[in-house]
Image (cartoon, rainbow, N blue to C red; front, top):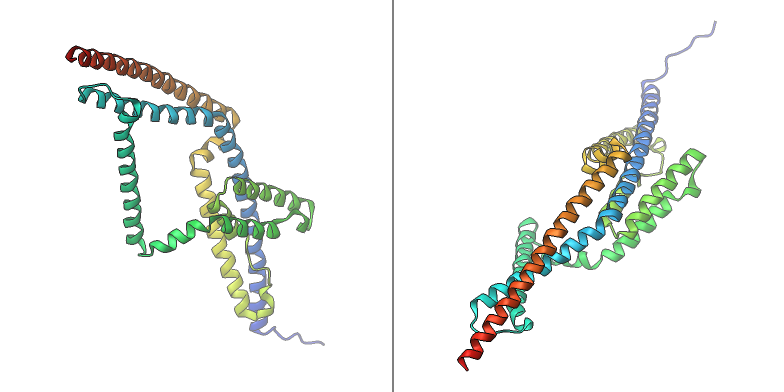
Length: 280
């Protein structure tokens, strides 16, 4: 009769860890897929919103600046005793804008010094945005290229991810590329060859990755765009339509304000011209 000796504890631990490693790997894979699909869906919703609302928003921004300039011209004319050209009237406005910009830059410098005391690092970092974009894009392209897929399902997932990468590249969105790289750049080397400690580290790494993916998933689901996308395209369309109406209403108010300011400026100039002529 053959006796079967119990396996050593080290072998049992190894089997258990290998099973845990595979189990956590599958959980991470499914979470990655959910995150990728949500990000892609939300990118498409954002693109729709920007396509429909972007031109109106830009027109509103331009009109606000023009109205601000006209208000400053009128205020200046109300304080002087003779007519002034637009260039002379705008001198004070430009001076105030430069002053505000100087204040903003100083606030930024103080905030940056308060955070880590290395202003020069931020300046250098800003100068290297293009280089960082290219490096991240190339790394992600090598990592996620659809030709590396092992089956059709994985190929579809990789194609979706590359769409996200390409969209982030076109927007020069370094943060999005960094997020994608952090999620998908995993060590391809198997921890099995490193023994029990390697397996433990591999399991811990996948557990940590699951936490990060769940956090990202929660952020996507709770975001304004995420809530809109979850309710369906009909709700997205209603949201866009409502925002269009609000922007058009704001545009109408800004145009009315601009006409009124132009009229008041012209009346004040005539008044100053008449007053100057009567003195002569």
